[in-house]
Image 1 (tube, rainbow, N blue to C red):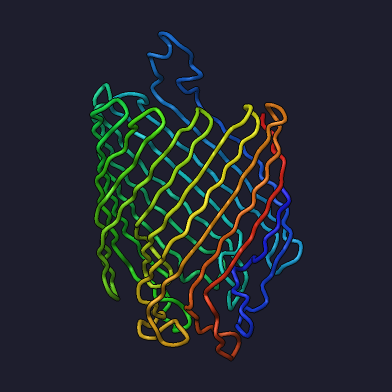
Image 2 (spheres, rainbow, N blue to C red):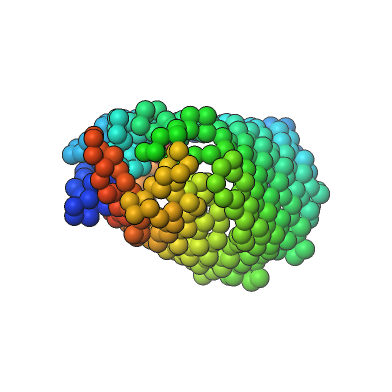
Length: 393
């Protein structure tokens, strides 16, 4: 693929600020994939063979992404992904899934660091999930655990390295053919072994975050379905204020035809943050997808939301990160993307993507550059465009 990024380092471009000169670049991206799996129920065929599922199912994949920037300080580098998933006793009332995922990303995610410009980030997740239910899947439940290691290779960002234990559980009761009552629970335990008490870096503290929701997911007609969830989230931190508030999601889905669908939704949630320990989102979104002639796929999606952060303090726990001393930060973030792909043949396709991301906030950082401190606005706008060729085998 050949692409263009209007703001490689998420700079604000505000005149007189520390990052007034945004850097844009053309980019070359090459991404080979290899996927291997056992046969699924569709490929096994009808009759007795389909009614007798195998004792194990496996799916594994590996990919690598070469990025070459033609005109910025960002370096040519290679990211990659490895995903392994083994299901024991698949397609039965009780099954156990073991999974392993490793990912290395190399694209810049913020402005250049004070020490180096290495943006490589390694994340590895390993875990297991048990699924159980009745034979007809009228009732089902699940319980899972995963452990994630998140490592920043660059010295400028290694203070944010973290370890995360994630416990999930849930149940579903199907009382109509395509409608179910749902309950889900998440618990995250996060620690920062390299957290730095420097006043020039954000405060990162060990934390427990939990979320519990109940709701409904169902198809009311052949063309209309609805997901509605509501619940409670809380966060407990080794320093700073705690968090508790309502969370929820409402999404309406419309299937205009077998190849055309539209969704409209609103999501209120709570997440880990490297600034202020956490942020809460109130976001509306929509997406549309249509497949024409079995060969041309068009997808459009977009959203806008309010992002509220916890107290934005420096690593010493006392110094505000903001230039004016305020601890509050609220952002309005907007995003939009259009994707198109044309299958010339079963093994060959052309694709194009255009996207926009914008963060609108009046929050300004005090940024140390050399021996001086300069005002650094947190807002940014970013345009990306890609055109490429895919080959399938």
